Length: 247
Image (tube, rainbow, N blue to C red; front, side, top):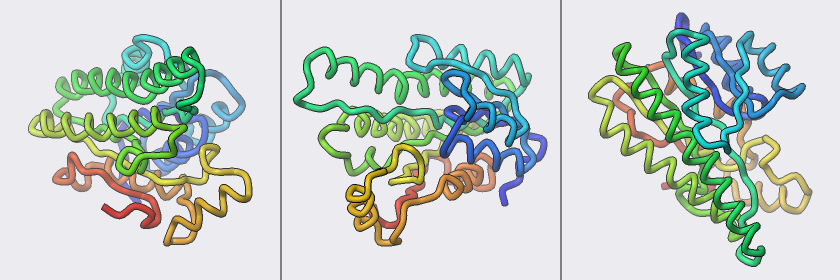
């Protein structure tokens, strides 16, 4: 189990799925946890209670939301040691959609999945510079490497951007002890995974391991990175996809 005793961790998109599992696991590893969600909900309350942490609400689709979230987190905690950029959306961007729907889906996907994480990374770099270092873990996707279905080109493009951003920032700031890692899950047992029987069967058939990943598996890798156990892996992307896409 990763050791995060005495550290403070911010987890975005923490009301459910990977984010909630990461927040809970971080607390169990000894961290003080700040959780983020887009809006209040029963799930957000449950996640905060299970992690024993404070929930901060911010709609990451809004301009400047990432910077506001970081400012609120730093104000609440005083110091952050690790940031987990997990929040993301998976909405259709179908080629045959009307012009307005097409433009809206691309704009919203890029706002939440790229611009907000970029703003959070920017603010985290400034914060970590003042305290001698820190860790940022960006949750991307298998789709950022291999692509996705044609109705989700915006999602795949956004996650490819997150991977490129992570590598770039690692190259630029690891010398200042600001470490960056990317996680690229395939299907995970969350609301994004296929729910109907036929699609679920097809998804699992594509996974040599024979099942989709659990949120807890992804959380374990996130915490390993956040713990600082292997600084030399900075800039790396960790695939969690049951060998469905092997690079």
